[in-house]
Length: 608
Ligand SMILES: Cc1cc2nc3c(=O)[nH]c(=O)nc-3n(C[C@H](O)[C@H](O)[C@H](O)COP(=O)(O)OP(=O)(O)OC[C@H]3O[C@@H](n4cnc5c(N)ncnc54)[C@H](O)[C@@H]3O)c2cc1C
Image (cartoon, rainbow, N blue to C red):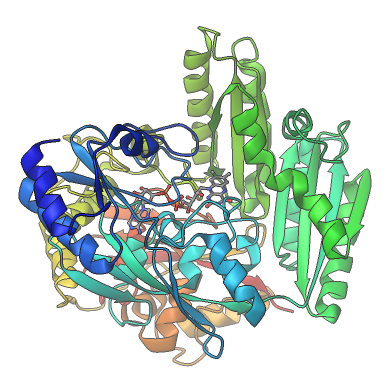
């Protein structure tokens, strides 16, 4: 990197080891956990928010791209430096600033490792709910910016549900606090899952919960993967929400067994691991329901009540990623999510793909957070096989097509990065990509942050959306626009108990909706019981305070007419979806400035 630029960063960060251009440091910052990446021209190691601001200002002045890096555990080849780019390494900003047991909050610097935070919370009997399998590697900032999930997202939600506020440094060096409780469009929600392309997070306040007093683990073994998948769907339909429902198929079990003795049966087609937690009484009730469903189809059911037995049961699943890395084989980890009632078809589609390509690929092992419909089909191949790359590409395409045909999404928790960028145009229409490109343009006009991540090349089909752009700009400037209510005439109410979601037209009144939900024996916490004449569209657009927070947690998707007249869908029926910017968030409290909501998708629960 040019000497003038190195000097400018050195002056701005006051020397020391905050700026590095030695080969060892550059090489250390070249690759992520999986071995993807490119060597940067410079590494910056800020210790404070002010250091980050100083670095961003120099980068802006000298047109240097900044690639943020923390735990480097992302699964999407999302930290891509290069000789003309600087890595901004946040691992030194790793202090837990405050734990407030009364409010159940923690304030942290972005580089705090998830497991370190959990360790500091344990004496307070508290936990930060997001528990990615990479908790020992991943930072809280990385969890937020990837909207990480984990085994227990099924009951407790993904990272989005636990972030109260963040401090972010924007591309011009401005420092802004984004708060979940701020009325108006959910800009915090846009930042969460933005893959480091909009801002650098320098601090976060996260919500905590008490550690569940009792946890029971169960494992069911199945002669066919389809039966295992159908059992998961059956458990979801009972309305019992286990804390976790994870799975491994035959290829996954046997692949793992080559590296470590998991104790899992190796003569079955799939195993399902389930946690139920809560008070003694809750665990007895939920555990009994889950066990009964398991026993209807499983050839064997194991139960673990104490910590040691539970750790043994989970050991294999939690070490699956290590086995992948140490296999010495070529691999690609997929991350498709489908509405939960489609898990059996998705599993079948993956197995069919594996069969079709068995001459060039070794096998496809499926693990994943099946209770959320989030499967990780991991394709293994022999690195020396010249036919493997083409077969891998074809297999990935087939798996993605199958997920999209089942109303699924291209990534449930790993993000798009550079790995899934080619699938963005399959997932989104040109209008929906254009809207997301505007989000990037408004936040980061010079493309300083993580260029080349997430959004595909501009296509001529993408329309200009000037009115939408003006609305995004006004929101970021702190003066959000508004437009009159116009709910359209969609009065659909579709209750999907197989996935526990609701599709509802914006014109439906809250009173009518509550009646219909009651008739079907389900509840929707995001729908308030007062104001029966208000419509669903009006609720989402104008929600404030507690009501807005409930909508934030319950909303899965919206269909909208943008102010420029084009129709777009953001989100959908998937419990986890981190493809692109979480654009639906703009419509929560957005007062119709970003367009008119025509229908929405919410999470529901079985009334108990
Ligand atoms: C073994 C293993 C298991 C995994 N299991 C799961 C799982 O169960 N669930 C799951 O969701 N994910 C999982 N992951 C993926 C990964 O751990 C998560 O995406 C994690 O949140 C990334 O955090 P990180 O600190 O490693 O981020 P990094 O990899 O360092 O960075 C990820 C992205 O965030 C950006 N970034 C990082 N910090 C900031 C910041 N402060 N401000 C702005 N941008 C930033 C980077 O530029 C990059 O684009 C797994 C990964 C591994 C290796």
